[in-house]
Length: 306
Image 1 (cartoon, one colour):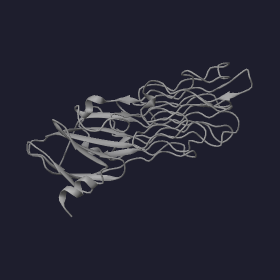
Image 2 (spheres, rainbow, N blue to C red; image 1 turned 90 degrees about the horizontal axis):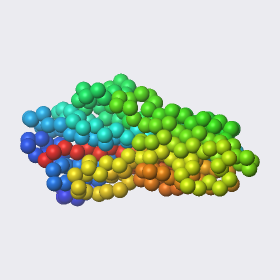
Image 3 (cartoon, helix red, strand yellow; image 1 turned 60 degrees about the vertical axis):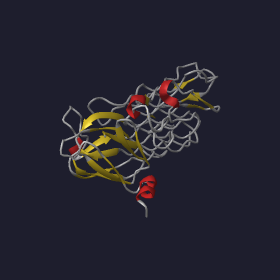
Image 4 (cartoon, helix red, strand yellow; image 1 turned 135 degrees about the horizontal axis):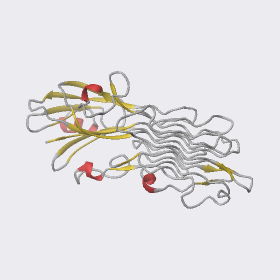
């Protein structure tokens, strides 16, 4: 098999400059900008540092799996799913050897928390980052949105939204990371018109929107929208692919209102979370309530100078 074909297929890759030599496997995308080599994973893979005589460091964006809203809704609204943690960590170690990349899939309607993404803790530079658990540096998955009587929301990287009967949204940054990452889900509510509505799931850069009492008859505007996602255009060094999963991540899922309306996404939520649908794969976005059974899968992007 020609080397060029293998690189494009995501089977093997190489790069380097200034003495560093890295090969990678299992990646979904690879590109080179003016200053950096990039690899992106949407599933399990690895990279191997073959040589690094100068002790060069790299940067990563690591995103946990997005969560779903619980189903069926039972007539009391559905809270949107929380987004996975989106962690932008600059100056990671690149020690010699092979390093496994684990990517959390999107959570389902019956999960309490979506799966996490991780890299080995040996990449931790000592800049005050929480290593998560054991020998891993984690990005936690989002928490599921609530749906009465099938289950309450759960905390997560970002928290799931509440629903009419279990109105309170759930917390983000769970388990705790440093620096803090993730936000709370929005509160659900009962309307004086006899309807119930769910709050939006938390996002990377903002809490889920609340559905206020009496505001739910015509769900519109930004009521019960998911929390704002993260946007890192500078990470691409003005080159390479752009859009959901490349420079925009982890928007919260919008809440669902029982007659059939959704809260409108707000802020960065459009980056990976279509209104009324599942989170987009590779973004860690939460899914909106009702028929959106799965959140968006997580991702990891590695770059290092060439």
